[in-house]
Image 1: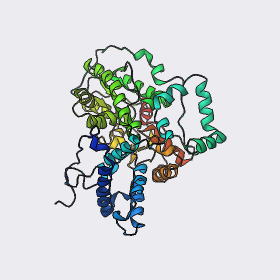
Image 2: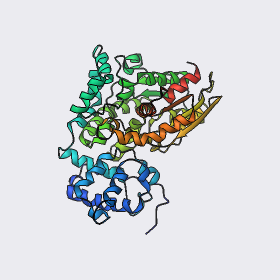
Image 3: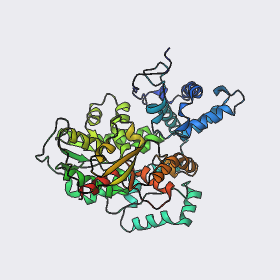
Image 4: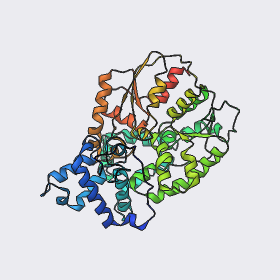
Length: 442
């Protein structure tokens, strides 16, 4: 038996459609095995709240071992996991191909799926992961003003905390009536124009705007479109799109993930077959198509096709740079810039592409923070978890404060807003793609 694992971690397909996957007795047996190995290692204690919770349970048990922990307390560890994947990618020495075969995030996902199937998931959590429904309703003209006002009102936030369990200090993203897809409806049906293709890239980009980019941050989506067009790339929208399924994945609602896949994948394949690459502005959504869906549907050829054709924006721009096709005619330096490297971007194993692109801008010094922000899209909103999310984020916020930077932001816009909220200094987050638009002077 090897002591630790020097090989690159690999992931096994998720056997989520088998009956054994939802067998609670088998689940608890695997939880006990993995918890015991984690207790003996403890390298992950500095990551999310799952690990301190586990180790406190062990240290306060009668035996000081996992066998002394009440099995029902296992769920406390599961509830704190928001599937950032950092333990798997950056800390655990026992991931496959090591014989101990630890995939902590996917074990937590299995536990969440069991909990969901048993009907134990809170109504609040089922509601707030319906991002398309909420976005469509909240972005209706007139309604949008009411929603945004209510979400900023202290009295209504206290009511929301007492009734739904949304922490009153959590920053709820604003909604916009002029969504990204409305702003760029002229891109629908765009034909594959004559552009300069590279060895890897087609030079034609179909934008998957994402729920957040469409309803909550259309400015970043617009900035992405303008940056791509400034680089003489053809840009279009998917004819139709809906949530990528990541919120439902994190909830354990795997059937809803399947339904989202069946809605999005055919639209993406249609574009890919017509000569387009796919780009999405939110790392979690890119990861969904690059990793999670391929692991859930390993035999689906269309899912695998999308996996090979979807890109993070800065990953795509660096590929164009490698091919000698990136516009580097920058008009304005950015000064000191600090980028928070989003967890779901790091998990894609593509390197610090955002830093690499922004470092091409003259008179610009780029530093990077590689720590989780603790947001996760919904974790930071929940009354029982918000303080833990702030604790996780505080080292990131302090790093930004100490850096005295001209710009800061995260590739994950939700993480950027959470950092801004925790800093509480008045300094606003700027999406890195927006920084690049500023540098181009467009």
